Image (cartoon, rainbow, N blue to C red; front, side, top):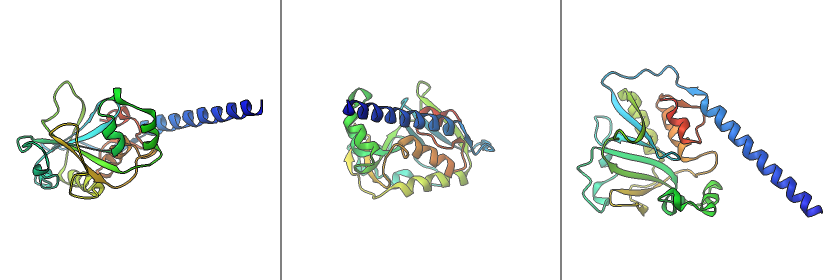
Length: 216
């Protein structure tokens, strides 16, 4: 009987914590940051794209402010990626990234390992075309100053110039990254913090993908 009561209380505590997390996420994610943002006519196009759960920045490979191919060297990739005009950049837990190429590969043990902050982090970098009409993306036209701030934020997450693991295909790789993935520092929070740092619209805290795009 005592064990049953203990289990019931533990279960109730877990449910309460989960509900508190969800409520905080929905509230803070809806609270807008950088509400005074105005698009820059003729500015640099910045995309944030989502697969429904995870968000990435999608940026032009070459601008006057930064040339990503000088940072994520094309020679590291198994195929010639110099023909692509955009690069997708996301951040997360390396083990979760590599073991979950599709959401059908999701495993609770791998997820728990990630949210507990265990294992190294990585930047997932893919050379790719500009987002197409069927992709779930938000677009912003930003100033040179805003774009440099975003580029500096991404560069600050890099922990080394050499890839740390192969990607899912031939046009993407994983690079070592700073920080540790957790319930409070997720891939979507990382994207939201980058938007904040660049003075671009987002939510105060964005653990869910839809919260990032809802402010575009």
